[in-house]
Amino acid sequence: MNNYPQASRILVAIDCIIFGFDGKDIKLLLIKRNFEPESGKWSLMGGFLNLDEDLTDGASRILYNLTGLKNIYVEQLETFGKVDRDSAERTVSVVFFALIRIDYHDSEAVRSHNAYWISLENRPKLIFDHEEMVCRAIEHLKYKAALHPIGFELLPDLFTIPQLQKLYEAIYNIPIDRRNFSRKLLSTGLLIDTGFKNNNSATKKATLYRLDTLKYREKFHSFWNFMPDSMKQV
Amino acid sequence: MNNYPQASRILVAIDCIIFGFDGKDIKLLLIKRNFEPESGKWSLMGGFLNLDEDLTDGASRILYNLTGLKNIYVEQLETFGKVDRDSAERTVSVVFFALIRIDYHDSEAVRSHNAYWISLENRPKLIFDHEEMVCRAIEHLKYKAALHPIGFELLPDLFTIPQLQKLYEAIYNIPIDRRNFSRKLLSTGLLIDTGFKNNNSATKKATLYRLDTLKYREKFHSFWNFMPDSMKQV
DNA sequence: CCAAAAGTGTTTAGAGTACACCCATGA
DNA sequence: TCATGGGTGTACTCTAAACACTTTTGG
Image (tube, rainbow over all chains, first blue to last red; front, side, top):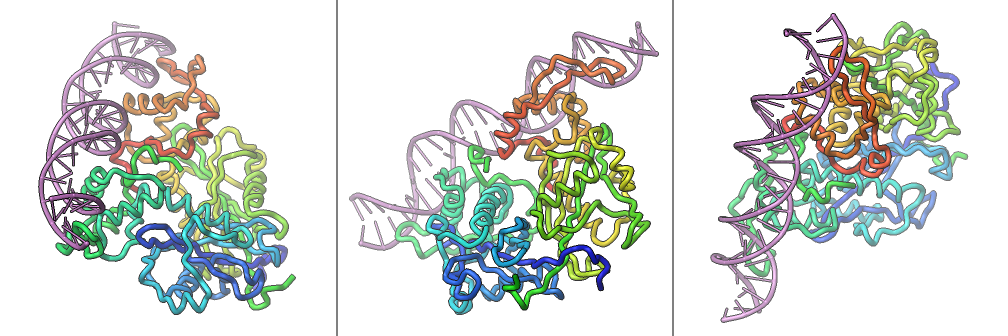
C-alpha cells in the first residue's frame, strides 16, 4: 500500500459553490463559520475527501448535508492548488459548481450549518481563496448559460417566460428585449405550455411552462444561443 | 501543522494530455512506460504534485520535462477521483490539457522519456482511467475550438489557411467548404498576411499568415464561430 | 377606465451556406 | 498544356435585432 514512497500525501478538500435565484437576484449559499479554523469568518461550504469515497460522491455528500437535496445540477469546476492557499496545512481543493431551486432546499439543514443565502453584490469577504473560486464560478455561469440550458436548474418546475428573462438579466446584468427573448426561448422547443397561469402577478397573468426534460437531456450539449450576441464575451 | 487531524492525506497526481498536429492528423504524446507501476504499458505523461509547488507549477514542470517547452497553451481540464482509479494507492489526478506546436518540442527529451506521438485513431489501450481522460480531452478540444481560437496553438508561427482548414477538419472529422472557411477566418481579423508564400505545395503556393497576438489575447474570450453550425454539438 | 405587465407581429441587416469561376505552379 | 490546389465572388436563406401594437388584469 505504498508503491509511491517518495511522493507526498496531501489533504484534498471539496468546496461547493451553490447558486440560487429568488426571482430577482442570483444568490450564493455561504457559511458563517462557527468552527475552526477561521471561525467567525465567511466561507464556502466544504469538507475533506474521504479515503473510501469517489470525488463526485464527496461533493454529493457535502451538498446533501447542507441542502437536503439529491439529483441537483453539479459540475466539477476547477481544482485550486496554490501552496499556501490554506494557512493551516497544504490542501488542494476541488471546487464544485451547483445550481439549485432556491425554494426546494431543507431550510432546517441550512440553519444548522449556519448558512445563508447572500446575493452576489452583497457577498462578504471570504476565507482563503474562496473569493477567487466564486469569481471563477460566476464567470462559468455566464459562459455556460449563454450556450446551454442550465438556467432552468435555478427555476421552479413551473415557471413563466418573464421569470426566465429576469434570471438571464440577473446573470448578465443587462436588460433584454422581451419579444426577442420570448421568441428565442419558445423556438428551442424546450418549453411545454402547462395551460396554467401564474397567480403572483398583479396584472396580466403569465403562462406557466415546464421543461421538456426529454429534449433537455437529449440536446443539452448542442450549442444554443440564449444571449444577445452583444453579450457573447466573458 | 496538523489542524485537520481526522482528514485523510491522499496522493495528488498530475496527468497531461498533450495534443499536436502534423499537418494531417491530431496526435497525442504518450508514454511507453519503462518504470513501475504498470511498466510496459502505455499511459499519459504524469507525476505527483510536490508539497512545495503550486498545482499549475507542477503541470508546467511535467510538461517542460517531457517537451522542453515553456509558455505553451495549458488548461486545467478536470480532476479524476474514483476510489480505485489507481490500483496501487488512492490517488486523485488533476488532468491538464496542453496544445503544442509539434515541431517545436525537444525530441531528445521526448525520446529519453520513451514518449511517442500517436494519432488519435491508433492510440493504444492506456492504464488506469487514462482513456477516459483522453476522451474527455478530445471532447473539450472539439468544444473549445468551435468557440475560441485555440487552433492556432497547434500550428507553427507561420501557417496557411489550407493548413488551418486541415486542422479543423481533423478535429471534427468532417470536410469543410474552402471558400466559406477562408472568409470566416479572415473576417475574424486575427490573421496577418506576412507577404510570404508557402513552399511545401507542389502547385500554387499558399499565403503564409501569422496570428495577431494582440487581438488574439484581447478577444480570446469572445465567442467566435469557427465551425459550421451543423457541427455545433459535442 | 387606467396603469402595468404579458403576448404577438413586422421589417431590416448581417451571417452562414451552397455553389462556380479564375489563377498559379510544376510536371 | 494539364492536373492540382489556392484564391475570390455571388445569390439565397435564416436568424438576430429593433421596434409597435394589442390584451389581460387589479385597483
